Structures are given as C-alpha cells and as structure tokens.
Image (cartoon, rainbow, N blue to C red; front, side, top):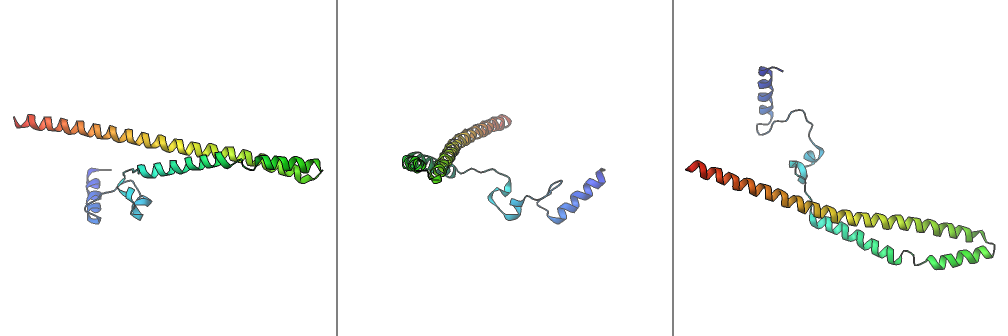
Length: 151
C-alpha cells in the first residue's frame, strides 16, 4: 500500500466516524450489544467469584454429609431382594453403584470449582496489586521527570 492510498483510507475512515478508526478487525459481538466489556477491559467481580465458590462449597458439604444417606438401607434391600431371588436386588445394587460413582464425580467437581474460584480470586487480587504498584511507580517517575524539567 502506498502512502497516498493510506492517507485516502484514513480520510475515508475519519468521514465515517471522526472519533474512531478501525482497521483489520470486525466489531466484537459484545461491542454491538454494548456490554461492560465493550471497551476491552477484563473485569472480575470478587463478590461474584466468592459467591460461586461458596455455593460450590455448600453443595460439596451437603452432598458429602447427605449424599450417602440411603446407602445402607439400599444395600440391605438389594441383598434381601437378591436372597429372595428377585432380579430387582441386582438392579438396585447397580443403581447404588452408579449413584456412588456419580456422587464422587459431583463431589470432585464441586471441590474443583470451589478451589478454582478461591485461586482465581487470589490471583486477581495479586494482579490488581501488581498493576497498582506499577502504575504508582510510573506516576512517581513522571513526577521526578517533571520536577527535573522545571529546574
């Protein structure tokens, strides 16, 4: 692309929207909908992360405490039915095994979600501190240059 062509494209873009130029990019879906992330900033609400983590932990605790409440009575019923030569006894045992496997999977998932939300919250807090520290350092450096320029 030549310089003249570049200048022509810039002026065409300025005529369409003088406050904004956009090249090599389609508008983001979020921009079209006008969401909070339209300006390109990533946002994380610590309260939302904490709420998700807390809910996952409560579910983990509840399932851990009550998810096996029917285990012993189901096992007794399965053995009794099997002893009486009912096929339902074996089926009940299969259902109980599948429930146990599903419960373990769900408990693992809840623990993973809870731990990940806690980790994410800590990571973002550390990132926030790092960004603030860096910006503060740059501001202090700028002030030093400004003071040196006044002398």
